Image (cartoon, rainbow over all chains, first blue to last red; front, top):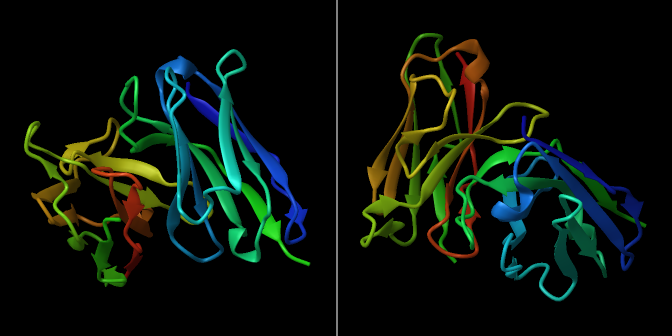
Length: 123
Length: 113
């Protein structure tokens, strides 16, 4: 059974940093691109960042480029999101999600999602 | 970026009746080389993560009831729930994965009338 478990969400002040983790199990982690998607309170879904499995290629939304860094440890089946220079508008539930098709790159549609971790940026 | 526009924002349908949700892309999401539309639909129940319902615009994900049907091509797509059940009360999102960044529609809230 595929499971994705996010952790690391917290209350942080504007300008602060946070690292999110997503522990994966139930599938061959390296074979799939992984993605962070966020959802601000009462709002829709926003893609944040993705990382391919084999090549380690990354991509970021313009809203987080230069502030967030995605990484993965394929030996630990874990995806990370390092978030620096946090802003109030980064407040959201952050989901990690697995690409559905196997690929050396990515397709960026998602068949499994974690339950999410809440990041609150406020003074 | 490709903008995804859903309509309506919300709809109320009687149990057993049909619900129809529309999604329009600002650019075609049809890859001519594969003849596939790079379009997915998700369901998000309250306090739950999204769940994949449909991909390639019309392929139902394993385990999804056949009352959910995706259709359309190019820039115009539809998700139809043929006979609404109580458990279908949720937000529904379309998403294009034709180009990066992948983008979602604003969501359609489906309720029971």
